[in-house]
Length: 243
Ligand SMILES: [Zn+2]
Image 1 (cartoon, protein in one colour):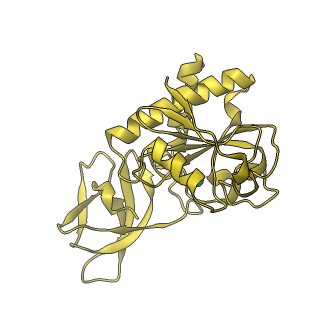
Image 2 (cartoon, helix red, strand yellow):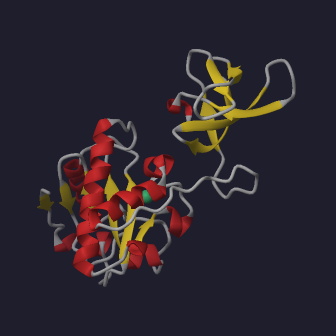
């Protein structure tokens, strides 16, 4: 594992990491961007925004930018928030477009997180997500693919037993934020099941509807049946429509 330490100049501490910190856990993010780890860190250190993180990881390397004994501004829970004041913040790169680069970056992140857990003598419960602190849907792509799945990859590194991947509850009252689905330029078939065996309808080109989450890699959408005022819920195939 290649770890590159980029040092934030102490003259920037008052903006980027004003408080001393004793790390109490790890908070995982996705960058929602397509820049490399080195670019993310140099941009973060270079600007004067009150936004910062400790580590960025891409498909090739781990890059640290802020020492772990200082706080970072990464999860929107305020100046005395648990996230901002106690967590080692880790950004996984290439989450905007995803694909192989992101999958590899996520894998490298699980190796690095396992390494940190061992170093600090922490259990898997110390691995948290941005969403836990202020509700933001971050790390977005890691969540789309499944959080327990991500934790299982870390467990595997630690020689721990994998836990069952959660079956999400479809029956109303979900706390997952409703998102938008915007169809592309072709008709998108909608199916009753995530294995796409039973077609129940379709979305017109550019049609917009609600998306309740992604299950087994299929966006679950609720749309109005053309020519009626009736709603139907089913699964689309194209992930790119999820906004
Ligand atoms: Zn985040």
